Image 1 (tube, one colour):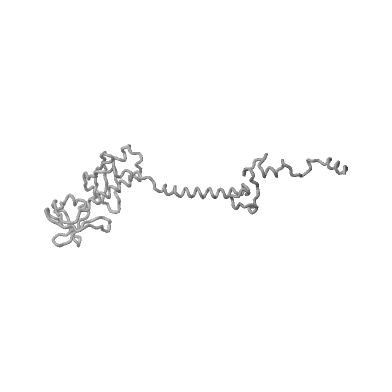
Image 2 (cartoon, one colour):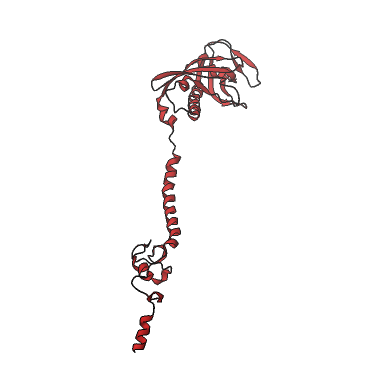
Length: 255
């Protein structure tokens, strides 16, 4: 017995592969001495079947194995939040829409035929209580949309007025003017000597002053230019070209 005990004492403890309290077994199970990224009592077991936990929420799942799942969940949350943000972002703030109620008192100051036989229209309007002037060149030129040029753009007071804003303002005022140029249906009296009507054969007929005509409506021709449909002495005529735009100056409504 003493023989075996002496041999046991001679054995080097450093060579023994024993499980003791300060070995890695205890460290990985109870987070002592060596930091454990999973926290206390969380081991590195990768087999979820060893516990009641399943999936990436298992405390027995390897931290690095869980990373991909955690990142996927985080991405799903971010995508969900951004989905609502995208909807809000699409509702872009529009300076022109915000200003639209501040435009008022639109007036045609003068209108005349230029060297190209088209009309130049000079206007004024109020914006935020201040009067501004502008012009549309070649207003009725076929296949061309006239653009507004006005001193508001050069005032320097409204730095947010960009090209998009200018286009919207130009179209906004242009539509108001186009609607004003369309006369109401009914009877009108001619105030100007020599206003020219056109019959169905294309012949031009000058109209004497104080003649009563019946405006039946208006239409658009093949050049996208408007014209009036007029009845006079039971015959149908047309008023087109520049005369169409001068109608409100040449005639007065009587009924």
